Length: 324
Ligand code: BTN
Image 1: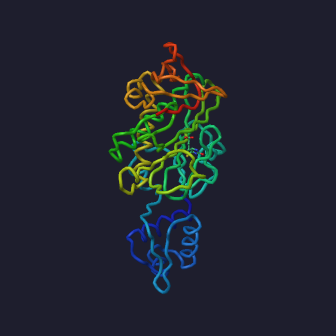
Image 2: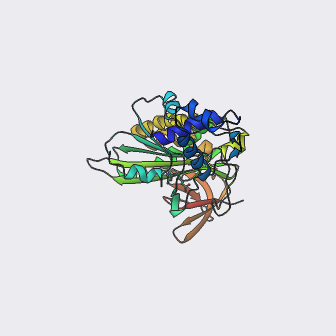
Image 3: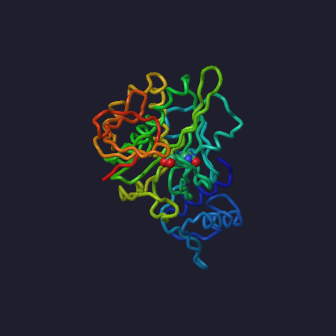
């Protein structure tokens, strides 16, 4: 973690008691100069963090803010050898890992406090304000053919649900094929996987995950579909460090099982969380709109739809919408 973000973490921890602190005492307690304190406060304001500057008194944080902290995350993860880069600001965590010079076969993770070019599926943008949500990418490789990786996004979706459930105890998380996480028909998380064929029969994958955690507001132009966040659902502010650690633990477990046995291990879990099953679905596949009833997934992870003529068809790509 670079020095700038560690100063952000220290000051947010201090202001986290909800009291007013003046610049000099913040500097002393955090072991930094008064000028460095002003720089951090200025940055917080630029990033949209609600901090009041009270004349003659100091600074006051208006809402809780627990920033990402490598120590807290590492304390709670089971795989000790992982490399985790925590960034204050990045274009996209997926692109960061793609362009990273250290491309060996080890698992590498990047988490950021904000993204300026967060990417969603189908060339959409992913709204990524500072300090509120999880913007996470994990790079790994599989000794599999590209075609065998079609189930990877589904398995990732289940791992995300598992991690969220163990931190929040929310019991109504559902997956929407191929890789959205929904609560009551509102999107709470999304997955974007970039895959390329490596050498020696390996495929490299960058698994990008965005989870709406403590986000309370967003303008329609920022998110153009119904959305929700974990704080809105549970009524509680969530420490993203704990969720991030749980996400890593859950992913390591699910990805290892996927690597060994493929998708077959997960078919039942998918059934339990599949929000399209038995429902009227519209699937946009290229320019075509296909209507059918959700009938689960096949062994490759393709979407099965029961067609109006009662036959069943499977689709390997597309954008599915649940019809009311
Ligand atoms: C979607 O539902 O359309 C996929 C959203 C994926 C967003 C995440 S946030 C971390 C990673 N970096 C990105 O630029 N995108 C993914």
